[in-house]
Amino acid sequence: MSHLFPAIICFPDLHSIGGLVPLLGYLKNSNANIRAKAADVVTTIVQNNPKSQQLVMEANGFEPLIYNFSSDPDVTVRTKALGAISSLIRHNKSGITAFRLANGYAALKDALTSENVRFQRKALNLIHYLLHENNSDCNIVNELGFPRMFMHLASSEDSDVREAALRSLLELAHNTKDRSVEDSEKMKQLLQERINNISLMSAEDLGVVREERQLVDSLWSSCFNEPSSLREKGLLVLPGEDNPPPDVASKYFESPLRSSTVNPSSNNVSKKEKRETPLLLGSGPSSADSNNAVSSNREADARSRTDAR
Image 1: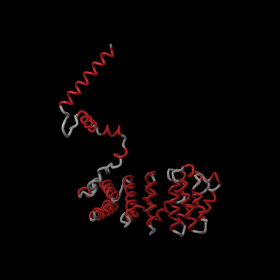
Image 2: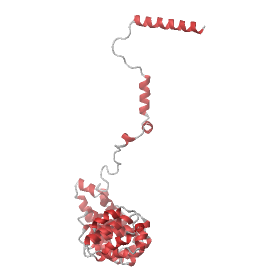
Image 3: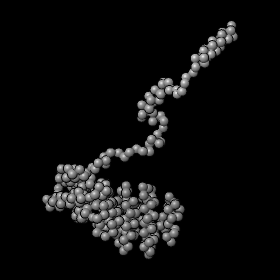
Image 4: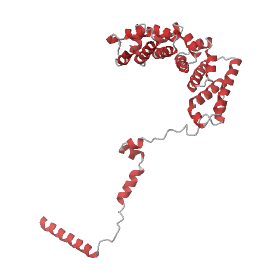
């Protein structure tokens, strides 16, 4: 049955051809691969598409997705369902409300305990989006004990997981006024460990963790009202990172008019070249040739005056 899905994706509006309800039915299929692929297709049709989001919600497509995300025994199915939910509720108020009512945050917390790195990343990215869009959700996250999980994942061996965890911690820091001394100490210890690890990285590895360096510094500044030691060590912005990349392609595609406007000196040079008399190599014309040329010119003038009369 999975061979049907590529054909389904070709239709931008499954509802109009009666394909949406059968697709959502595949989310309950006994085959885990079918359930995962169905969630993949849902992700494709609802991503950045408010109309499709509404149709899926009206067709009760959210319920099997949240069930697969929170309860499916197959981690791939759970990951795909989470991806579909992320696309379904993004910029969709009714979807976000349904997610909260379905105890979606508890399912996200459970996802963070998974050993599957991809599942963790998707969960962290959705959490950050929800916190960024709804500051009041910071209270829910704090009450459910997410901050300690974020701090644990901020030391993950996976750089994307570390960055996603640090982003969520930074979002919480911006929206949390009161922080206990114990929490502040734990935060300082975490960030100092990250700074120490970053300090030991090679130049190549430092380039890979550019966003992590910026997140660590921003989080330190937000929590302790001072810049991190990454600035003193010259590790926040490496040489060349603050410069824009060289513009190689534009010189091949810019119009002649723009080129002359950007580089007016080229016009001056060309005009100067036109005014200058070219240097002739070899012997010049003989005096006899010059006299003959003068005589010819005089005769031509005389004929012109005669014709004019």
